[in-house]
Length: 118
Image 1 (cartoon, rainbow, N blue to C red):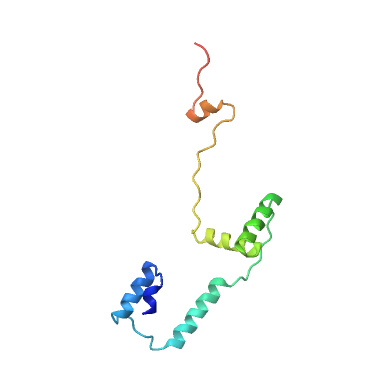
Image 2 (tube, helix red, strand yellow; image 1 turned 90 degrees about the vertical axis):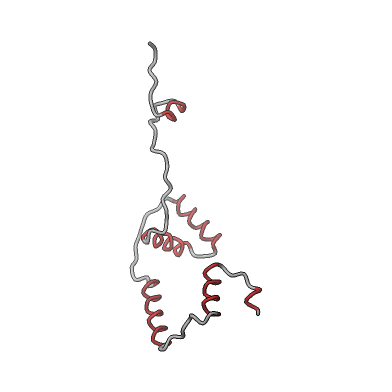
């Protein structure tokens, strides 16, 4: 069969196995389910609000460059990033807390000031 020549991920393999075992059932009302899925998709991707934001020129150029490499408009990229952040799909990078600038680099890493003298 032609399906065996395709590379399938684990989810696709699971679906194919369920199909082969006869565990999948056809929807009795396919058109009703299709209409419902379309409504959900439209509501998910509907863009009905506008915002204006100020960005540094450097950040805007970086966004435009990234969007160009992805092959999408930069506004679409910004919208996607904001959506993912709002949905909790973007993870923040954990960084070290800022160290006092008045300490030499070695002492900043240690996180304490060494006493001078005796």
